Length: 611
Image 1 (cartoon, rainbow, N blue to C red):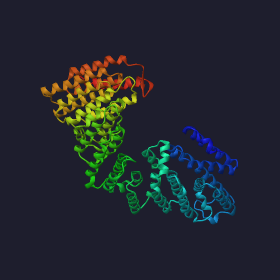
Image 2 (image 1 turned 90 degrees about the horizontal axis):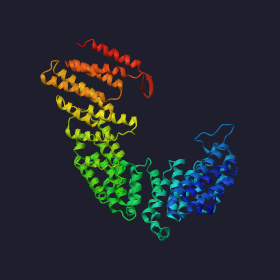
Image 3 (image 1 turned 90 degrees about the vertical axis):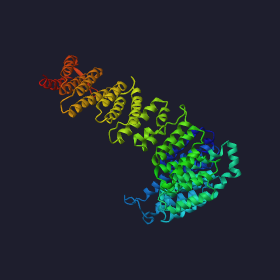
Image 4 (image 1 turned 45 degrees about the vertical axis):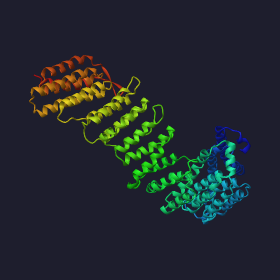
């Protein structure tokens, strides 16, 4: 029946498999109407929750076994509910005990009597808590009377770890069946605080010595249970209650474990408004049991969701960073730093951001994992002239050694630039930085790069090219396009965009000169036309080349560059015989006739006006 002896010598995975088998045995016993066998399985499983011989596994064991208890509670409740059906009419969701027939009530009482006769405290507590909802069949006050009694029963559990998980289970069941009954939740937490000193008692300390478990690791085993109890309490709780909880934690000597759970469970607005109080409590905490950097991380996570009072913001950053900068372990450092980078970017100027990034660079060497901090910088700094003038930003990017990560960072920056940059720019700081970033993306393209990835990178680079404008300085604009062509020659969509941009530049020059070029502008337009003429042959798609020859020829014609226009049209004519019968369109092979016909119609209509 799943006796404890069978489970004592198993590995963790075998243990989990065995528990799963017991869960299935419970369902099978129930479906074959062996209710007593089902109850025995549940009792045997509950007994395992008194065993802490492998203490690190206790939270996992709790989850596995309470899963079986939940299944049992559901089966019993549904069984009694089906007995309440009279004349094929089932009970409404909000039924009263008066509408339950005597047979169902008798069966329900029978279950409670069976459970009351279990000799051992822990299985008796857990099995009764599992069927707590069944009290609805007996009386209106059943659940509200049971919860305080079950809360008091937990006082009889000697091991503080076993007791806190029993409280977590009772709070969970209580929230499911009667969320309005908050009093028992608070009582559970206050009882836990009263017994918290047991952790430092001889019994627990001796057990830890035998199992070779350090106190910090042991304390982290409490976190899931305390977090859950506090989350239940904090749900829709008034400020007064949260303040009372905070005061009670203070009375315990600012225990770090409790403080961390309070910051994890309470509303971010509540924590942010009292940031300086929490920092004071963190500073007074004992470092030995629970590391302070985890407390500052928890505080930082709250400040990412809610803003602290304006006057306290700099002091909060200074206090937190004093602790973070002293961390020696790179993983601990970056786990904390990434949270506070976000806080710094949200509330401060580039001077503070630069200081924080400089500290990150100082702490991190290329072979260490710290690639999670960059989105926080980019998410909150939309002013790109500000971002790139942060002295340490590009050195920060250069630290990303792994190419895939570096490319992701670059994509992230470009997406943010295209999304948030409202107007075109010629700022040299931005241009140099973004050219460097686009070059990094372009250079990552190789023979194995997927077409979708190429399209995405090209779209980001094109978005940048479209945002660059030197106003009336057309020569500077052309120089920029020439430089871009040399940097991004492996991405065809970028070359196509550059050809269109240069053609547009030639037409803007014509517009400024109102169609009458001076010697200087005529030479400039010829330079634009030459740019297009030497770039088009490097494209692989034959119809892209044909259309660009035609388009560029029309631009040359409009700017009175007759010999150049002639060269474009001749190049197009010489290309027509090379058009294949079938071409690939959206991954499918299609006849090229229709495309060729469309091109020739446009081409001949242009030839009508050629002198």
